[in-house]
Image 1 (spheres, helix red, strand yellow):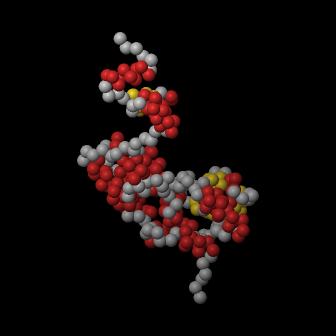
Image 2 (cartoon, rainbow, N blue to C red; image 1 turned 180 degrees about the vertical axis):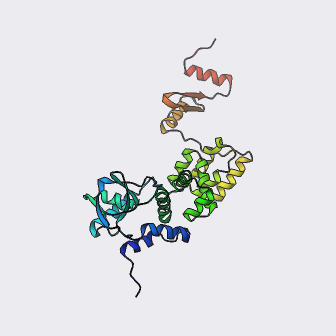
Image 3 (cartoon, rainbow, N blue to C red; image 1 turned 90 degrees about the vertical axis):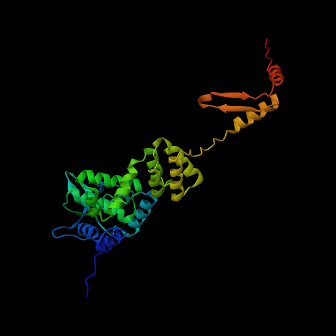
Length: 300
């Protein structure tokens, strides 16, 4: 009879599914996090002594998901211990940061853990692979994680791609997103721009046209192909249409009342901090004299 996997092993199989990661990277991650190794044991550690993985690429954790996990832990207990390494008087998480965060929200003082010796290279690689497996990283977080790992481990794009089980082109395309302005990267992180739309924006020859093109994408809901076509037109000399600013109700009401007062077209341009200007149209000298009479202005 085949030996049944432990709860920890089954959980790790689920954690490190296929999802585009190579078999070599998959097996590497499993050997680090799957089971209790010789001489190791599961112990209870104070939550106060545990710190996040210093190489954690994920910046944003879904609070709803953490609360759901906390409820599951409250009802069923922690089925899979977290894995940590000793760091001075503290412990750093190798795997299981979501379980750690969920446990902290509960009235618990300790958490089940396995203490394991590992180096920075393994920590950094595993943290990235774990998040790539779960699709927990937004495109910008993934790109920054690749860049950090390359810098920390002095890797080329090809070596990094091999290490995390991705195609080199995938890594290269992700890293290109970091060339976008910060405000555009934020839109990608917020989900307002897709990775495909963002990559198409990189084709713009002049960064000064970026905001106008982005405004057109958001206003008109352009898909990737439409963004690519727009970028080509802009590079060829066409200017993207600017979104017309709608006047405030106050400005519209004031314009209407002034037009009724003077019997002609009146335009009110409201600026910032209370400044602005009023333009009154006239069609002839006689029309101008009529307007001046209304204003009680005498001209020699």
